[in-house]
Length: 62
Image 1: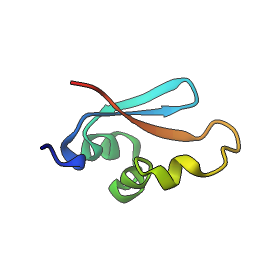
Image 2: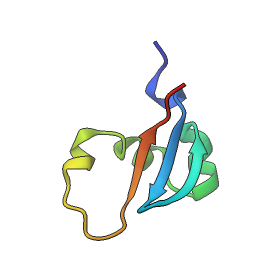
Image 3: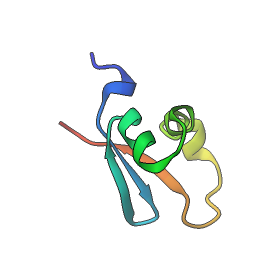
């Protein structure tokens, strides 16, 4: 089983793709903290009300 931090993710803002890669790679490209990006993968983040074009992380299938 691959750790969540080592999986390949895509970061979107609305319909726009901002970055792909591991959480560490996306963090380096965007300046967002690894903790914040990891939180964006949890169901609790996805349940929060969307107030416009918020960012979201989607796991890419291998």
